[in-house]
Image 1: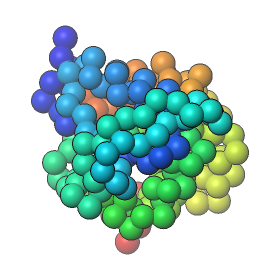
Image 2: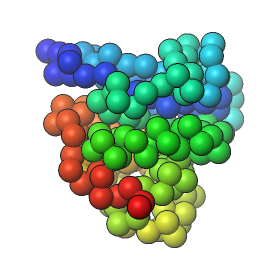
Image 3: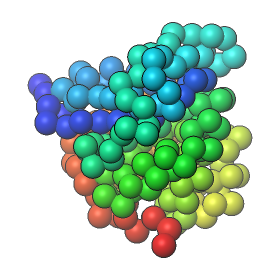
Length: 190
């Protein structure tokens, strides 16, 4: 059954993404019928990791400078030790993330991925989780943080680590099926 057959989803990833946190949601989205673009800071491929070990790479469909948030129905930001750090320093990425929230799109982020949301200033007042080490960063940025396998707040889906992927994938497909969520726009800083 193609629940997401009419949806186009963006996955933001840079070198150093956690392999399972990109490929597992990607497979779940495709299995649900979604069209998915991997968007990155550069053309070609980006290198994944399995924690500290080099993993599989993935082909980039669009460079961020050519990506238009208006073409998408949802956004996924995987974690990894290096991926969020590279993404959060790019102004075009931050603008893309803010644009997704301003358009009320469902957004899913796992592990260290919510660091990008902190930099985009879209976490204040939101119920969230993330990797244990960044939970204090989320709290300091104004999020209401809990240590659960998946937290859903008005279209925002967050999880802690690869062990949470089954629950994360189930909820992100569910939220992307529901479509736009009015609560997203409220978290965009003025």
